Image 1: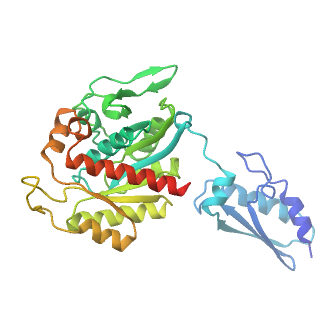
Image 2 (image 1 turned 180 degrees about the vertical axis):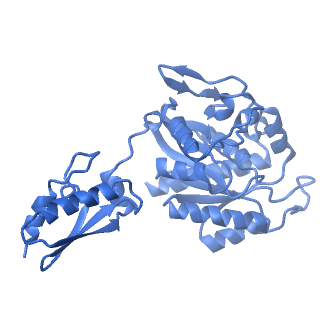
Image 3 (image 1 turned 60 degrees about the vertical axis):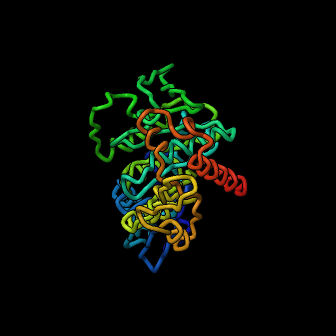
Length: 349
């Protein structure tokens, strides 16, 4: 019967084709079992559909079968944990964001809940509290940040890096700054991931305390791409009070839990309407949806944003609420949300 040490030594000759290192040395051989003349080798891969599976299996079978005392070889596949995968295959550093301290993605389960309005005004609220803030419009299907901030100029490149536009104290990049305002963006999965990677890697974001990322609605490729590129990105979920919005937000929460992202809080938009500062709130879209979801998930509700005429005007005329009416009651809600985000991050340090 062949000894395990002999099998292990033979497997040192099987190299990972990209890393050029022995499978034994990098830990991709997780187990060797010997029963008489039968040898079972467990190969750890990132997925069952790994393109290296067939090649490495054949190499293992070849070197082990050649050993005296071996009649059969079986290669079993084990899937690496996320930690093991990241240790063996770390992501190449994204040059553009290497000086960014924290990432905050604003997400929603469905469209029409005011996610971009929240992203823009939360970014401005953080800036008003002394933070250096960037804003990335990652809504590759309907980029609306340029309109909300009144930006019509195209992006420039300096030494091969894209330079963000600067306005209202934010550094801003959007695909809406690279094509005509009325042009349609037609993207399929791989192109979405590549474009978002480029917006992180090839933009000269500089030193930032926060890069706020406005994600498109839903649980598609952009959200997954951001999760893979920025595993430490925090998530701020936006909903409205009605049940149909809550159902979609639950699905998005499930996605970010699966990808290991931390959801820092919930924001309920369009919570109520006031006919005057002293009037009773009119809850047009229902009551208590954000609070219900917070109790259900354990995610804190950071704020309830009212339906506000100035908020709507700001989105249309390019002067957001935090600029046009920073002392308003609605602006105070955004300031409170920004302060809570800073407090949560400070407590985590």
